[in-house]
Image 1 (cartoon, rainbow, N blue to C red):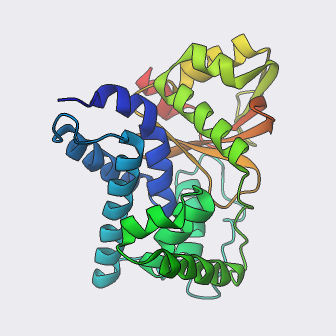
Image 2 (cartoon, rainbow, N blue to C red; image 1 turned 60 degrees about the vertical axis):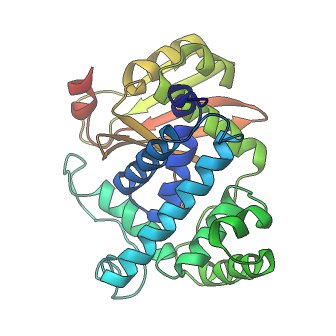
Length: 290
């Protein structure tokens, strides 16, 4: 076979999971869709796929579209979580060690936005406004004219503007690429790639939430920051995705589909200058995987 699927997995998986997560609102579903896309890639013949990333993007988007349509038909979206007033509020007074908080809050907040969009609007909006895909490419994915896809994205923006909980401003292309490089390096456990994306004087801080017996920990300098990131997040069971609602460059870290940390990045130009990790539930899940 002409395509090196292992190399494609290392290079493009993080990007594709982020893409699928933005459409589906669930990291487990996103992982399943991306796995299926790579399975289909492995079945292609020599010379059949010339642009691997582009091919995977189209296949992943179509699989997401099929899943969205199927879920709509079965009425399986989570409407009751937000049906009272259409807003999302955090669980007041909940102990940070309580497992029932962060995963549901993040997923519900995303669905508040996505539920307002038709499947085609969702795909057009995510591909164009978030991942900057041209409408000609989106037309190939949706099987509709480019002008129609442009209108779908416009309608999606109008609907999202009416949501009380504002989505983040779309990152500029450079920041988005830096965040993608950071995620890819972390999840691949690639120390050299992390050093490339971190500013030499970058610092990192880990906070374990109020009530934790673990004090905050701070590291200074790219080598120490990168080493700690690889130590905790450079494992096959780790998945990272950009947060589609929070302001700034925020990454959600999952271990075996459980949300275990929120990572806030400060990006300056083409490098990350600070990494602030909030671990609401001390690294019990991560520790078991080391």
